[in-house]
Picture 1: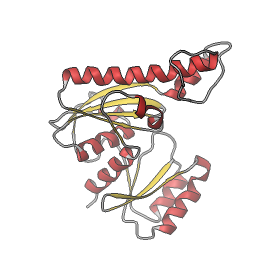
Picture 2: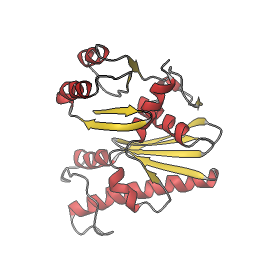
Picture 3: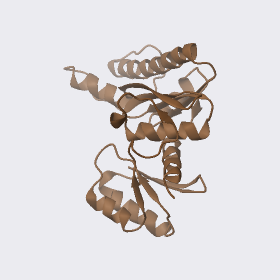
Picture 4: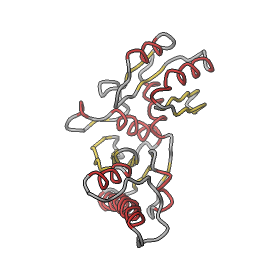
Length: 231
């Protein structure tokens, strides 16, 4: 779980907390920044009533959903199913890259692809398994493959089972991302590509296409949503 404090649109601090230590991290942020004016919560998993109450006792809270005022035209066919993390990413794109075709790639638990047109229309994108999910799938659905942590392979050809798995996951993801970018470039000129998410640091140096890597892109989108939804 991530906590971040912004002032005048600039990130002041970011804390990454384990679920079981979140309340302590939250109390630390509240103590360090007693003048907080507002808060936005983006949760795709569980966010307990206790955690929400602690927030509400200290700062006005806005819970992100598709029903908030958004800085883009949402053309998604099922807007109620659009993940809040994707809403935040597209909001960051609308804020930082106006009048541009933008493809946002978030390499996390899943790899999501989200496309915003130069006319500020969100058309949708794609969802694919992330790196960790691919390792877990190979381990779970086979009899003998081990469960590995992600590594950048040193060679193109894996010379052991472990190395072959690393090559398969890493090169598979790189090829997928580059393929998506190439297909979008074929259909949309002057494409800006943003790479973010927890696995972006594994991938950014190996992608041949021109990209902008920004690990805080989702947080910046959340801050912008808070700004435009607060009187």
